[in-house]
Length: 428
Image (cartoon, rainbow, N blue to C red):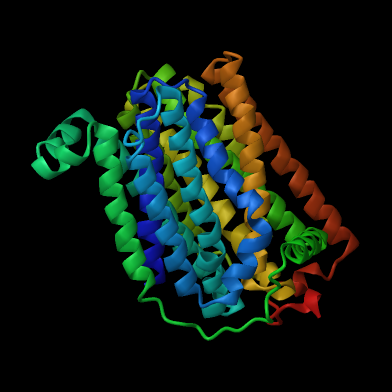
């Protein structure tokens, strides 16, 4: 039931992103507005990072997932109602930003519960396998969500939806009809949340004072970055999620500029890359927890393969390349994510460790999306942006590999720490 709830919620999140981009296009918003909308979504993770971990650990995680999914539904409904308040064109665009930010707040609070429950339900030796299924399903939901969003705003499907009297009375354009359907998916996810059993995992009483929560969170960030295993896995996953969020928009713009695709066609390209990530994530399930660091070179290869994007034009070469990029990314990030969750659980707690992870990953998303929006604003070609992006990923992964070697050279016992069954050792 955890996997079903996560899949439906993630499908809705990704479909809503495509529908929101379509809505911005309908309102003739500028190109840089779509990545900046995602920037505001990520900002919620950063601003709330000190609080959502405590919230996730204070209540049964199924209840937390239900409440936060309900907040996402409210944001979706607000976006649907963008034209109901009599606002001007510019204020309607602002309202869409606000609505998507509310969805981001729900997602930020949802994430520690979603991943934290995995560490409560599985022993350390099964975390990589469990993460491969969770990540594989999450990325599969990205495929379904992006393709669903593209289909819902495509001319043929949109015309079919608007042929229903009840829907045409509520929605005035294709994006609005898509958003209403997506809202129903959020409601289905909320119903699944209600069926998640209580794991009976208990944590120390959580702080409630904001200043104390911020101080404690700063301490948790220092603890995880100071751990010689945690810092490598945290650095890699931080880079991956920042790069992955940026790559979504790069693929859309690349499809438009390089291949001449419409938004609904470009969303299929995102789905192809995500399908490759599913394959890579499933293959990564065979990697033992103790061998997770051996996949680091795959990240370098992924960055170099991205450099081939400007050289392909025909559909089959485009699809094969995106499948390869997705497969490489899924294969190296799943073991890193499992190692990070393991070290976070050993040192801190399920909710707090995921909150620290989200804080760093979303902070990098903010940085990389801001850089991408700036490059679009400066008028750089998408192929030049792709080249800079691929070189950056490959070079940073080489830095992380060297950093990991230095850590193991200075601390030969590090490998023995992987697989510990203790919990919250840094908080005692």
